[in-house]
Image 1 (cartoon, chains in turn red, orange):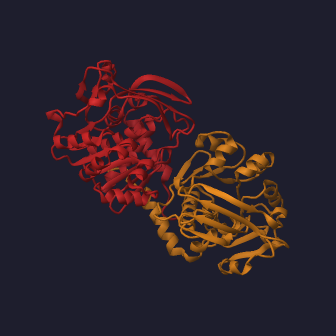
Image 2: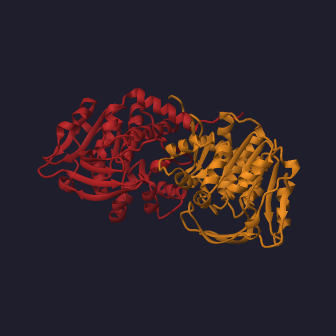
Image 3: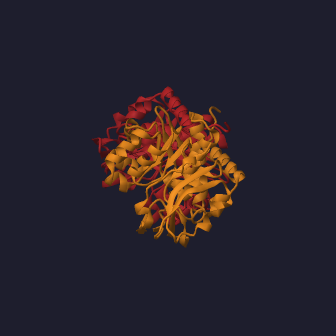
Length: 303
Length: 303
């Protein structure tokens, strides 16, 4: 089943303790679709400026990412420059230039409007709400957001919560949104506002999925080299939504496996800059990593 | 099989966002034996001053904790006063009075010297080494340590590493000891110095167990109320060693289950002040929590 993502398509310049990359492919929709395209057909809605190296998106198109919704507007593309120190859980933003992204108004092409699975990447909640007026009864809608919107667009975000099935947030955002330090209580607080499903991404500390009455936890894959954490969360979301769209069901077992696929794709994303590693891997690599996740947490019921 | 622990027996005064406790039972050997005694017979070696409320240890003695190695010395008992803010992973030490503990020299009673499982709680590595000269070919020796000893007693600690089978450390200590930020590499570094088994306790973020070629991860139990994190690490060690002593084997499946028992006992310890909660629970509570840990990480191999 097809999967629609609305989000940013950007150029990232990143510095980590292990190296530097300049003006490489970035943005939530880019990482999301690079990850999800391993599992299902992906439809992207976003905007780039007339300076964007669109040819570099070709490998995504070849893998079934439909870029018909990627608008090209006159002006400069969205650029982000950031740095990580040894604690790779913390990104330091050095520069953000919104460019054409500041006037982004998502227009969902007619052929994308029936997508059964929809992911609203981290953009203004007002735009996320606009997307929802354009799609036709999707089976599952998930959204992401960030500290900036939680602070500046709380009323819109609360309206959005009423209309989504799932939300993915990091632990800091969950605490900020709910004003509650304990993550179990914070997740409950959010579920009362709408989403049936709350996914808390804790970076190197793994991810929780809270549903009505169950909790699922997936560790982060213990990598010896975390090269560049940029895009890990969006790649997680891509793996999660991609797996659900692939198997076409939204049951507890499917959701749990979807979190593992999200963790697996997220763990590949951080092994190289940009979407490089996500473009190298194939279904065998993913299957092997999913099997590794199983070994990582497996213990015998009884001895 | 019996389990020997050498460590501190203290009086703790603790302040958390949820309450205050004054001069309650604390210390590594106290938490360790309160946890381990749910699983096996425990032998304690430690020291208290003549002001220690020894009668309060009676509930431990009733549950099979042999206090024959608990020396009573003239002077004041070891006292620790600390505070936690909302981030319960970080303890702020307000006062430490070593008292009689500063002259502690562990003497292992003859009847304890054949204990097959030995845990060296967090004391001066020179004393931990002295214990090893007094015990007779134990099957498994594990030790704990802390930032203070890593800094001030590194040569002794390195000697100790050569002589233990397992070490439990928190993530900060692992990084300090190995001078390596990445935990996978840090664990390898430590294993090269002696221990076949490195357990990294990450508090609310769970625990890793590294062996020669496997990695196991157990999440922390997602509690709605973490009341007082004091003693969580020692209770974890008590559950871990207690389970191994109970089943008497040191195989990979037993070690994995031992980590889960450690996580379960650690999660009970933080539900109340001191060893209160550890004294309330019984084997049914523990079995139920172990089953919860399974549900927390379980996912289907295939759909």
